Image (cartoon, rainbow, N blue to C red; front, side, top):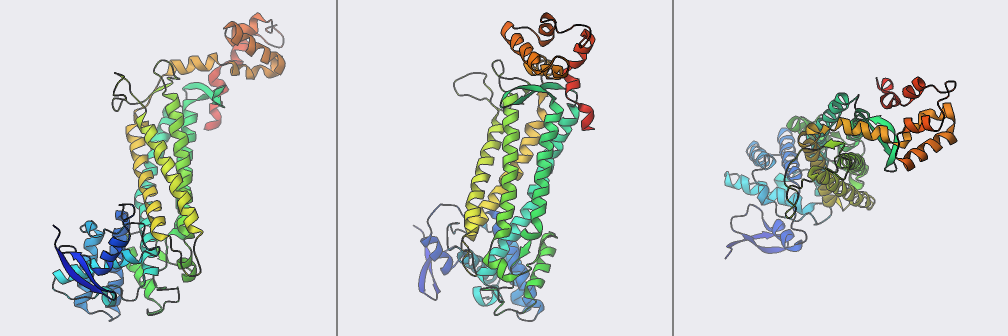
Length: 465
């Protein structure tokens, strides 16, 4: 049987588990919101700890908080930021939309840690000094999101970009059939396809980086409604400076306008939208690679994917493109997360948006999923792909679309006749051109025919340099 202690808040007595570091307001929230069984992302808890440490330092420097109290708060807050007390944050992500419950959860845990260290601090009067949930929770959200982008997501995407770009270089002379509408088209090189994938990821990095000036804007100092009531005018700027020191994330800055920064979450919406685009790119890349690796006998079998694990509990020897499937599932999740963020962002009313916990969870989850997937996809899949060079060349040369360079020599209609005849009779394009009498020694010689049907030359690889 769980043992309890009695805690008090302005609404009266509350039973709290005896060993818990949280107090009355957190316990009320635990009981009020048994919704999803999912709490805040660990990165959000870290950001809350960093923010409380920064605020305590500024209040100490201004002489508003005693050195003893401030030092105790800072030490406790840094322990939270280090992940030592994540289990003390039990509140469901689907809670009060301002994040007040989680802000008070942080204040209470810090106060309890201070008490354990022999320093009596008040959750509201001391830990929350100069702050409101309405500026602290969104500030922590933007700190967490910006830090995730700079230290995890962008580096992860750079790993994937480098892997794809390396393969593009390796395979720049490996010719294969192009495909449009999933039907045979004129040839490309495998390197050209992978160069396209690399550019998609590179552009995704650029999109993420472009959001940072808005994502890094922090509303701290605005308190309840953006006016800065009960806090010094320079509080926000000084706290942001402390946060930059604590995180080494230079993109953090005080918001341009506190009313915008508290009433709207457009920076999060923009960041989420950029991640959605990255997810769309990742899905396309994973699907193409899955198609090229399909087989081994009845699919395209143009490339061999690394054998990572058995693929079936009933079919012996079967191996599946598991990381392609992982990537496409992640893409679906990120796109879904963005839909939630976009709707939530539209729901701000007057001086506050009250969908912030859900937005924070979606954005931070998306960043984590994309970062991890990018690294794993690169290191365990892309780096180990082996091209089936001869099969790709054979397929490219057998495609009826390679008749296209003959348009200017024999005309579009005659070229179409060649393609249809070759397919019907099971002959090569070259042999069909000869059989139909189009090699006349004037408009088209055999030497010219061979030159026009050179599948690698059709790829115009010189244009890529």
